[in-house]
Amino acid sequence: MAHSSTACRSAAQTRGLLVALCVGAIASLAIAQAPPGDLAQIELLQNTLATVAEGVRPAVVAIVATRPLDTVNPQEVPESGPDGDHRLPDHVVPAVGSGIIIDSNGVILTNEHVVHGALPADITCILSDGESYRAQEVNSDPRRDLAVLRINARGLSAARLGDLADVRQGHFAIVMGNPFGSASESHGTPAMSFGIISALGRGLTRQLDPLMTDRYYGNLIQTDARINPGNSGGPLLNIKGEVIGINTAISTRSGTSEGVGYAIPLDRTTKEIIAQLARGEAVEYGFLGVGLRSTTDADRQAAGAPDRGGATVASVEFGTPAASANLQAGDVVVAFDGQSVSNADDLIGLVGGARVGVPVNLTLYRDKKRMNTAVVPARRKLPPPNTCRWRCAKLAHPDWEICLAHKLPADVTGVVITEVEANSPAAKAGLLVGQVIQQIDGVRIQGIQRMLRVAEKTGAPVTVLIRGDPPLELTLP
Image 1 (cartoon, rainbow, N blue to C red):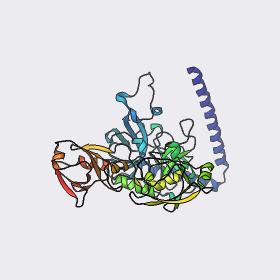
Image 2: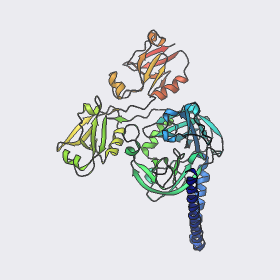
Image 3: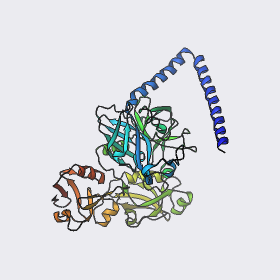
Image 4: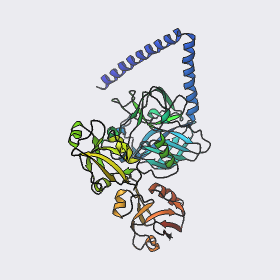
């Protein structure tokens, strides 16, 4: 079987080579027969692409992240090496990806799934000149699959950011990055592919996260420029060399590029998230506590909803804002705070962007009646790590479950104390379960990641500011 498989591959490679030679010959003939003016236009495009490559190359980063085996998709794990030896020492596996420098002071943008589960010290960033750096900080937003890394480097070449508003179907598209780890294995030099913008506004949330729980992939850019494993986190560029998207996913039956790739667009929302991550802030999303599904004709008929648009409520979680607002399975939501809802993915985006703790109005259909109901979005629960231990206390991000358990308002900021060791210095200093730490040594705290970074830089004693009216200031030894 092995010899037969090899022979098949050889035959396929030969056919592929013949096709490539034929295509190359036809292209050469077309250029040779092109009028001088047309040839000049072709050369102009060719030179433009080369200029883009030369200009953007220094800002493209190859990323290698070593992460625990239990955080990796089993399909990503190689079974054995060429001699049958297992290649996963210490139960870790390397993941390769790409990134783009967005600030000359060592700030790199990539996908969260590229570095998911890896500690900063286990993330290597290889620049196009071959210089290698360990990440010092990782700030991530799993919901939008974005992460910002910091390395100890200055004076780097940063990419120019474009905007989705200027992108049209049919525009040229350029991909640069680290496909199959080729850049990380060749002194950081990124590879490049070229195509067009195939479509805009693609939603893949249901395909990439079937339960629609943790990640949101909406309004994606589709391109036929080749995106392969390892390109994730790298830039999708326009013909000006501006970053218009972050390469994220492909539709494939072979595991490699088949000309259908997707990128997270650089629109106003994405840029705001990137700026928050660069500042070290936690990115928060609104949460209702409903499961959603695509609306069918049967759903519309049962609810009395219009023939088009809407998102159908499939389930309602107990104790959530949706339950408090008496939302029910079968409801067809057609508007969120005055904005029309075209499908489930649309509603996810609107809820995620809602302000925590601020009531909004839902327009829905139920039992052939049009209804309006107010709902107060809570803070979406973050994927781990959303808790940590610090100075004999356990701290948690104030998601909706934590706020509910400790009777806190939905829009509270800081970190919540959920445990305090008895007779510990923290207990003796006055820390209590249910208190909210909002500052450490005068530095504002927004989420666990920010808490951990600030805590690393504090000595002893340390002053904490506890939420209250008035706020309570405590000193921990």
